[in-house]
Length: 127
Image (cartoon, rainbow, N blue to C red; front, top):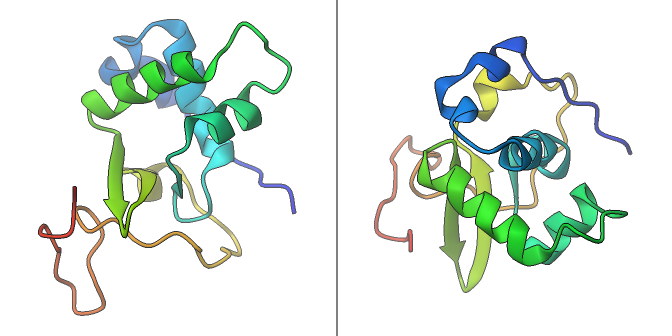
């Protein structure tokens, strides 16, 4: 099933986003189509490159990795690891996306930003 995502006009005037080079901004915008309905996804640059830039031979997995590092370095993207698997999520997903009929995520929640069933954040599991 195709995901339809929107980008709020305020993203273009965001001081955080505007500080990034244009290709990094494009990768960030593309993540909104890569991530699931909870704003989570596998942190695997080859998959992200294949999904966001399938016909762009000049865009490499190494460049995508650099983009993800820049985005995570300034805050709106969190990279975390659980049981040896790396994941990403947009920390402000709910502010930017309203999913009409969300599909449950197959990606485990971030132990840093997403509370468990009891409402507690788990800082010990994050790597």
